[in-house]
Image (tube, rainbow, N blue to C red; front, top):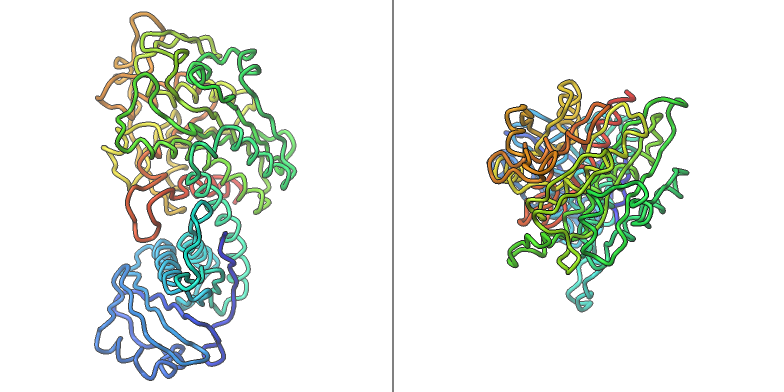
Length: 492
């Protein structure tokens, strides 16, 4: 369930809340506006700041008791030096919401001084992210052990326009993030290619979008041999999903967002190690990002044309599975030698990128949990960003920074293409360990022809195997924010 986000004026004398969150930068002092809160806590707020019990360091928290009514509890959350205020607000909101959920207070009010619309949006997105919890496949604990989930948050600021505009955008993008995170958390036996197609239909129906879904038979007619070779080891019907949002000028070239949707990746005959293989349910996070972005774009009613494309299947081991050494032909006619069946995402995306050309796009951005090499190179902090157009790469990097989903560029120099030259075909699907992220992107570039293109390798950022403080283990919602910010940037 997505947090209900409200806005209100900072009337601390008359406010009634079980928890007031106050986000403060480094070395805070008691402002005149917070003196009623100091009184409600019996002077403990002022003393904590004067004694420097709370110094406002990033992620620092301090819990103060309030009264039976009005402000009943106060949670101070530090934003640090806050050189990037919106990023700091987003992070503070997430930490506050997670703390509130542990307390079981049910609702909170959030205050961070004077806030612009962008500040409200950032804080709101943080609160929604921190409050989100995946519980639908868990049995509820006994009643006496249950704590109320955080269901409502009110952001306090005196700027009425900022309250309305910022909260509206935060709710829309927050819904997109929540959808992507839920899809990522669902196991592969539930979140199948059919399930992703059904989710796309629900979005299309809500926002009057056009939906096209190709199955195995339709893809065979399109000669998508690269995509289909990955799907030949599973009885589940693969899906190529196209969802079209047309609110821009008639005939204007659309932005195309592409997502890898491997609902489970065993590695195929090049099978993965058993330890940790359960995390491969997250190999569809690129597809989840596209669906989350389309949900948010529909809610925002942006005046633009956007097409979301998803290539979805499972990569399984069977007597019919594709083998190392096999050669397949993609829909653009290029022959591919299969070196490693675990380099399957690029095989799926190859035909999807060729399919994208029929929309005459102004730009194509794909996102995929594509390579472990990207995790080695950039860890879990930055998304790898590569593309055929330097200006578009920078535009995507700027959008990612605004979204709080930082990216880092990697080169697509022709020298690296030597690593994916094949002796028997036009190209091979793996160049081995050296420059693995770059050679994967260079493979995709062979099929992203006729339009400006950028590739996002989100293998290290779309999900996390450890608690990050702001989000628990599991899906993070990346790259929903990057997709949405890019589209918003095109219509500003």
